[in-house]
Image (cartoon, rainbow, N blue to C red; front, side, top):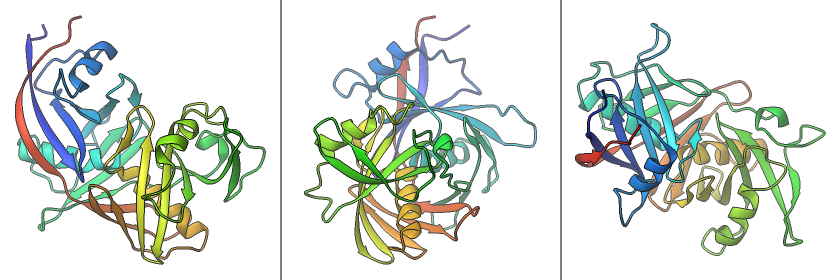
Length: 283
């Protein structure tokens, strides 16, 4: 029977913040209403995403984890969350391994905790076919023109990192129309499952500045899968060369990718902020 309260850990990766729950030693009910209540930054704990740790479906894997946005929706993948997840299960004594095999809604990822405190995650190979994003297009291209409802057009690259991304190159991320274009791209009719909208400024062939408007969460201080998608998009366009330093508003990530069918490797921090108790959802 579910308890009235649940223990939780608040974590952050480059300012992308999470509530992390141990679903192995606690019985947890998740509802959209409860997620919105806990995710409210004034009346709840507040988070970009909630991460639920569970036992794996397959014995050769170490864990399974699910990812929920503060609007109550569930998503397939989260790069900053993957690093926080790995730090959480080790710090809580749920494993003594430094390298893990973790099930997500879109496949298995491989986080590894380094001696320097940083976490490197094998995020798997990016996907580009329109049906894999998913994205409505008649051909598979590196760049697409997307007509917005305002009458303006943006040039995007589409990438799946287990979740959908649309990346556009801008001159300056500080003046980029993230607040206005972000929601229009996120909910564009050509993305049946919505999309994360990335705005990338190329600083050099091995450094970018990035802002991401995340589906279901709005702009966050950092987006791990968004960083992976941006670097992949930049390399495919001939703008970047691996490895690439990604400057987000919350800090820096290092992203490496060696080309088609190769996994994207993401390295960055994962930090525990505080712990506490919160009310369980009603069944």
